[in-house]
Image (cartoon, rainbow, N blue to C red; front, top):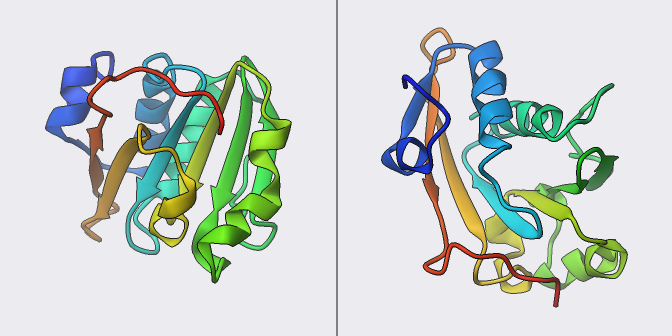
Length: 158
């Protein structure tokens, strides 16, 4: 992928060849993701979802440790925006997403980044952005495809 600076490049699909390259690409993507939107990150275990989020969150001005919320379920970061990073993997019911109180806490500008969104899809806005990641398992070649909602606009929390 030559330039990570256009949405057309992201929607056509991209390939990275290292964790570092994935993080750099995600940092560039941060400038393209509108505030007040949800980004759902789909992909198998180890496909690079958290690596992508780490770069994205850095691109939104956060410094310090950016870790997987696998056990905490939710990490909140403050940078240029308020960022909610959710790992829904361990949630057994979609309604458990509501217990995280994200929509009560979100103050514009915000982004909600959800790993394993299929577990809580019923609780996410229909107008969310979606990223499907893959891991080719050869020297950590990863990639993905971005899907934007038809309006490509933003949506406030419910």
